[in-house]
Image (cartoon, rainbow, N blue to C red; front, side, top):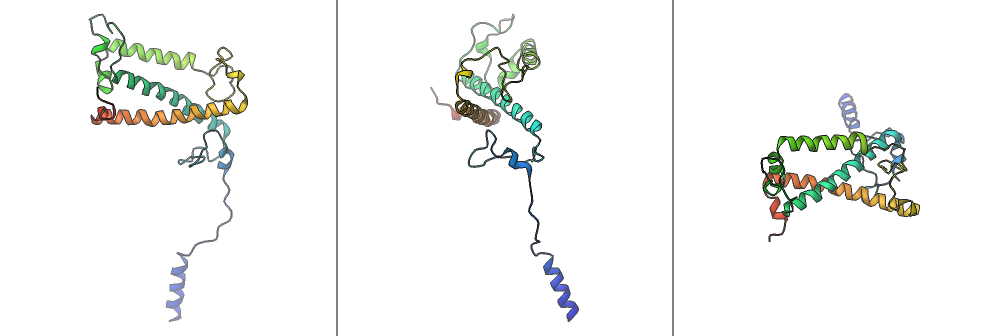
Amino acid sequence: KTVILASLIAAASAFAPVQQGAKTTSLSAFEDALGAQDPLGFFDPLGLVEDGDEEKFDRLRYVEIKHGRICMLGVVGYLVTAAGVRLPGDIDYSGTSFASIASGWEGTTQVPVAGALQVFAFVGFLELAVMKDITGGEFPGDFRNDALDFGWDSFDEETKLQKRAVELNQGRAAMMGLLALMVHDKLGNVSDFFPSA
């Protein structure tokens, strides 16, 4: 009987909570970073910056800002073309007009190959030569490179931080919005979201 009782106690202790020492994490290094806002605070579900590496964090923030800017342009472009706004004239020498190109995914297959290659080359040029932090700006994603200002230097530090937070959040929303537009475009029900004329 004693052996059975001892084995039951041993089996039960396998499911008892174990006292653990205080666990430290380096995420506290980024808890007050720009973009760490209620209700989530600093959100890193994949643990990409668990090690507290500031250089890695800055690189990921740079990529987040860049993708956010691209998606903001993408959402505006999608909405403008879905509204029927097109450039005047033809897209190629064979007479294909801009107005005959559909919006959304369908339009990507209707653009002539030479036109798609030109867009690809232009984006590559922007990526490799223009949209670079050459002079080491104030923050990740600062592409002014001592050439453009548009009044940024006239803002106080609190206003600059607020405007950067707005851009970051708008970029996050645009990334989700563009993804939703692309998914619903492929599902065929994206027109349900736009007011009918």
